[in-house]
Amino acid sequence: MRIAVLGTGSVGRTISARAAELGHQVTIGTRDVAATLAGDYAAWTAEHPEVGLATQADAAAGAELVVNATSGSGSLPALTAAGAANLAGKVLLDIANPLDFSAGFPPTLTVQDTDSLAEQIQREFPQAKVVKSLNTLTAELMVRPRQLADGAHSVFVSGDDAEAKRIVTGLLVSFGHTDVIDLGDLSTARGTEMLMPLWLRLYGRLGTADFNFKVVR
Amino acid sequence: MRIAVLGTGSVGRTISARAAELGHQVTIGTRDVAATLAGDYAAWTAEHPEVGLATQADAAAGAELVVNATSGSGSLPALTAAGAANLAGKVLLDIANPLDFSAGFPPTLTVQDTDSLAEQIQREFPQAKVVKSLNTLTAELMVRPRQLADGAHSVFVSGDDAEAKRIVTGLLVSFGHTDVIDLGDLSTARGTEMLMPLWLRLYGRLGTADFNFKVVR
Image 1 (cartoon, rainbow over the protein chains, first blue to last red):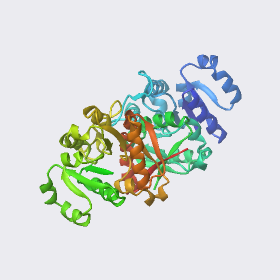
Image 2: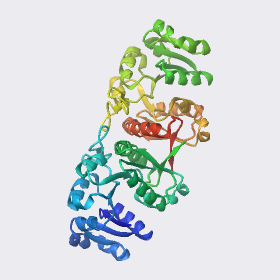
Image 3: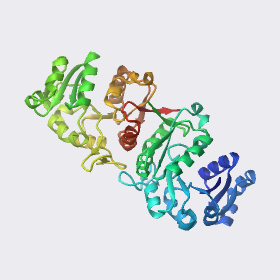
Image 4: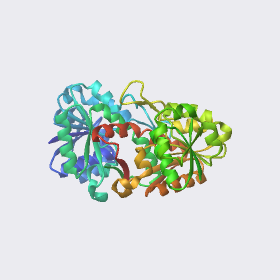
């Protein structure tokens, strides 16, 4: 697949490198290509020449699947820069969490309970096929789940489009996920986004991000 | 221990029967003893003569540990009826969730993100030693966790008083819990209460309440 990953941070890089490793054609989207290359991205891209870099609009325009790997507050601006026309009809895998760190740790949520970031994105880009997933675990485990307990833990998908969820589920399975739970429509993303406060406290308690939830049943 | 369980519903009954089975002296607290005995509680109490029934105030007065097994909306009224003096200095195990079903399913939360029901209770009854726990799984698994995957799943405790958490943890272990995670102070209850939206969607998706989260690490 041709995949655009919006977000040049560690999450975007981790997903991009793994997707490229699996044979996908990956382009990272950024606000400003020159500025990104002037930062620590330069060293990373030297080690990952197989991953392209382009503006958010160019990256999205050429992609079949777009990954929102920006921060919660950066999501709508990044997607707006990518452009509604470049997202129309495409799978938009939203892995962001609506965290507000402005008051320190632990962060609060900018949206919760009766709405979610995923739904905000879907409303803003009604022609995109938004699927929420991967937002409940650390980046390395998103793409290499077998590194923890040989993959014996769970990941969730939420979305209104069955075919888009099927495509995302296929990508997750290719990453190594063994327990992909389809929660239902996109409003179920409220539940996974609201898992963040517990995740963050566990992170503090366990002293590592290398953990995940398993739905034992 | 002498334990008061506030709440005559299925959760309160399940906890009471199990605690009594383990040798504790258990009294269920209710608003109106006569009214409770006039309902379906009569058949239950006939099968569980070892569990006492009293007003919330009388039940709490005689207890060392008080369990809040009421609904979220019923919690503060029930505890107020129990009386601050009867809760002072005691472990108050809060297992309720602040669910609002007034708009149908799925329910929303009456408090979240920057506050929690557990903290509301603690503020209202500052002399009680509030410990949040058991609110993340179905009643039968609260008290018989070994029925699912031989207990290979997790339960959380949150609270400001270390000794109270130690007492609650001991009770949980006696129920059969093998992975009791102390999240930290009572504000960490926000995380477990906010797990409810995901729990409820999983309940709908799996078609059973017989599941639980395991923190794989």
